[in-house]
Length: 115
Length: 329
Image 1 (tube, one colour):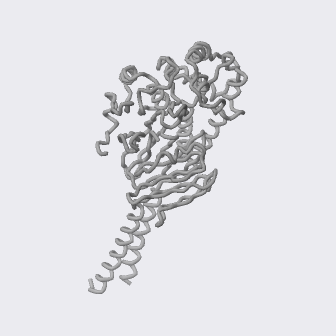
Image 2 (cartoon, chains in turn yellow, green):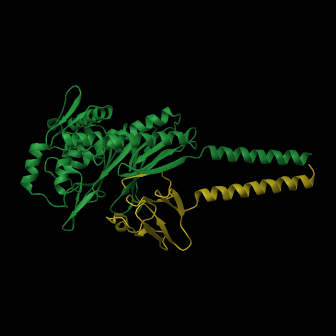
Image 3 (cartoon, chains in turn blue, orange):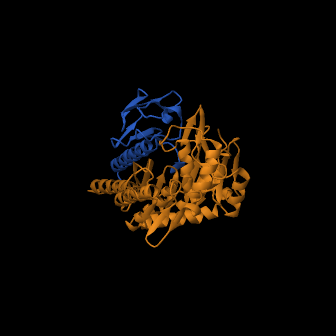
């Protein structure tokens, strides 16, 4: 095999490997998926660590702290159970009345029971 | 020429790998139904059409068996004390009567009448009912076999009684939804009705189905459960549905012998072969006093995980085969 061909093949394989690395890394990266059922939309943690999403009843404010804990800071729901849950890490937060689901995608679980 | 062939081969290999990965990805959909969030996750083939079929089933069950929808078959029974026998009403009352006996009355959908006294249905402001009123109400209107009867065409409910299938409807719907998904040609999926979960099939990466059990007090994971295909898990607790009276929280699962909220456990998780069984038995064990619950779990050979009110974690004998306790805090 000629030297040029060898370099060409190695380059192609390297590009493929790097592409696959980033592809899988993006799939497994630590982030929180915020689903808003009312709007059928999915959001992710913004760099500002503060996300305002509109649900069935109105706007919910979701914030992250420096320890990667997430909480629902404000919610238009009547019972405020989601706000009372406080800050959580690695467990889902759900506000049924406003249709907000905050789901950590970093975990190695298929589902959670006992929410 | 050689370069073109090699480039084509590498690109084709990449494409095949990408498509393989793409075709093995699950689709997940959540909807607000039956007063909670229902999530269905399915793997190809036929994932989307199977998910649609599953949600159709949930909608159908909600329309038939909801306590809150005025046009439901259950509302007809609760309002008119008589309702035409339908397949869903028959199925769910059969199951309820079966487990009412198995659990010695600790699973009792007719206990809705006592929950109503506390203001759980929004009919009255939350209040602590008088002990005599609770006792009289139980004697008069509680006990499924006492208040429910059937003739050829109708189900009859004792005048003044109320039934709520909230402790079984989710499990019943999951079972029917799972059948609908299989009939739609999907054989790998997970159905999650607010923590009542059924798993089916083998995931493309062959990994085990792993369900986390939440510790609602410490907001961490209590344990993980490894579920074989077609198995179900359900967790009952009083931390989610409660009324607050004078700053004290009263949970919705009552001890049917006392008429007061069950308070020996924070949560009870049960793994079973059917979602109805998991749903009902987690509720019934939660309602029992501790020793009775442990005894019943062994008697029925259940895989059960108990988190007691004094924060102790107890596993049934069979529970050791399925639950792996989280030792990290």
